[in-house]
Length: 352
Image (cartoon, rainbow, N blue to C red; front, top):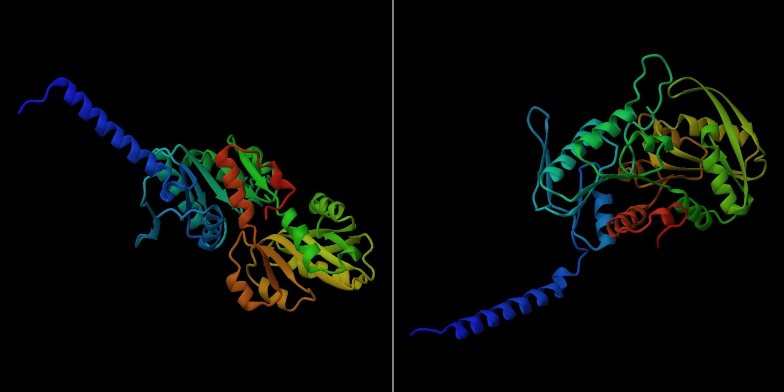
């Protein structure tokens, strides 16, 4: 039996319509309700933060396997297609910093050569941020080297939080969004310190003066600062308090706390100047070496940090450590970046 040309054309039209109908029904099915063309992968430095960010975005974290070969080389396998996708890789500069940095570089490169349309590195705590200038002869500017490595690996955009020196943004030739923990800190102070109107925001060094004045202005309270002189790294020689904290709550605010030597000395200085209570708030709680024991033996009411670095283990060892969740700031920055919206709203506001 032979079909004429009209019948063939009619059959082709019917099958084409059927295919179009099935495609459009697929488009509107729940499976396609996720944000299109976006993948969020997490490195091994902070998987908990990756889960929180993805939950907020309504996405599943991308499938990736990271492991070490027997000779300690880093192996990364991206186990799903990223062709044409807007890829975000979450990796914080903490723990085994060098291994995690290398892992991030390999993940960026793996996604880039797998034809991802854009690769954004979400680095909550930027590694080597304190090595940002040549402060003595033959000193390396390692933060610039890290910036070069990220760019060469194939990163198109960087999202980070509270860089130790904001001029690190200038080390990159790609866009950098430096988010601030300030809105989250202000919210925590207003919710958890009932008498915060009788408080003084204190900077433990002159470099953080701009940070504390901004917080003090928004809370409409006073500020003070402590001038410190270091003999060498992690060792403080002397401290001078500029401002009045007598019979008031002192709230120390800094961008990072490492061995907590500064916080410990500053708390003693504030109490000797007549402060009634002392709190410490910082963005990045590195807490290396004797930090946790210093916190336990210190007069602090609480030491508050964000979750840019995992704090589960530290919280088990000290009941003074409290955590502010900033995952919603990163998820909102990712959403706005993906949709081509402005991120500057997040510099002053905390998404709910």
